[in-house]
Amino acid sequence: LTTSVQPVLDAAGGAAIRLMDRAEQRLLALSVEHGEQLGAHARATIAAGGKRLRPLLVCLAAGVPVPESDGLVRAAVAVELVHAATLVHDDVLDGSPLRRGRPTIVAAGGRLAATATGDLLFSRAFAELASGGSAAAVRVLSRACSELAQGELLQRADAWDANVSVERYLERCRLKTAVLFRAACELGALESVRSDAEEDRRAVTAIGGFGESIGLAFQLFDDVLDVSGPTEVTGKPRGADLLDGTVTLPLIVARERDSTLAGLDLRSIESVEQAAVLCDRIAATGALGAARDRALSMVNEAKRQLPALPERQRAALEMVADGVVDRYS
Ligand code: IPE
Ligand code: IPE
Ligand code: MG
Ligand code: MG
Image (cartoon, rainbow, N blue to C red; front, side, top):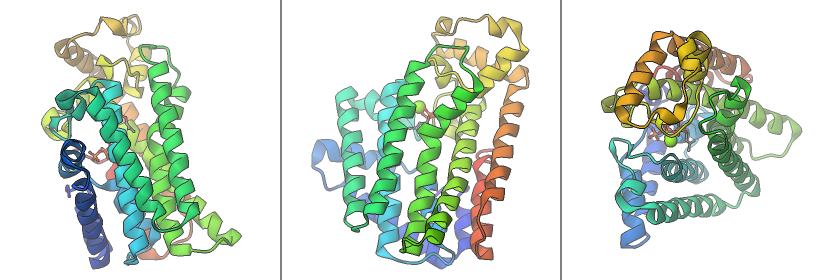
């Protein structure tokens, strides 16, 4: 696990660490079950790591100390598998060469292998969650997956359109990223309530709202890192969003501040070098700070949204919220 998650785990205690370890073991076991070709790609994706932020949210939303139930392991695993699946498919859609510091499946094995591997990961996620027998849990994850797909489609539909509004950009971020954070929190909370009483449903939704807000902040910050982040740190190429026509908040803000940027045709950006120059110009307008501030205010909003919770659980969730915009900085 990377440094951003570790301090939270330390604060949340032994049960959280054991739960996350069990989820990790289960992820690795699942990824070797599918024969050479598919299995190899799925395994490489899982083994390349990642922050495991969504499984962490599943755990903490259930309570601190984290209840050590099989159901919680299944939920944590299912959410990470969906996340992995969306990354594999996202790299096809975005034409990305690098993920978690390694060549993407689409780059190494082609589009068919990547599509099939993503499908495999999606189906394993639902098999895992469904084996717990909670229809409510399956509904939560399934809704998130549908919205995720809508978000990815919206992104392609808006590609190269530099006049995209901030509202539409935020809606895209909500769909493609924040809903899975919401689902992670709701699945964890569902594990701990296990009742259909109105009060319990409200608690699940409230903690889900927290997840959605930090998910939104997380995507905003990811979009800042796309412009600012060195590849050695992010494991992804800098300027990738510009190269695939994805218009993000830093560019939207920069265009408002710099008239030559406002007139620029995004399709003229064709090389990594041109993208790097554009990244520097965006940064020079101060747009990164503005986008980061917006992400920070979403984090604060998320913390305000938290329902009444036991102190240790609240503290752990707030730590995650604060970590979302602190990545690599
Ligand atoms: C990347 O998510 C995709 C986005 C929603 C921005 P993460 O940054 O959580 O990816 P990993 O799992 O740590 O690699
Ligand atoms: C998030 O968007 C992708 C998903 C939610 C699947 P990005 O396209 O910005 O994610 P990265 O930068 O490729 O990780
Ligand atoms: Mg991408
Ligand atoms: Mg990105």
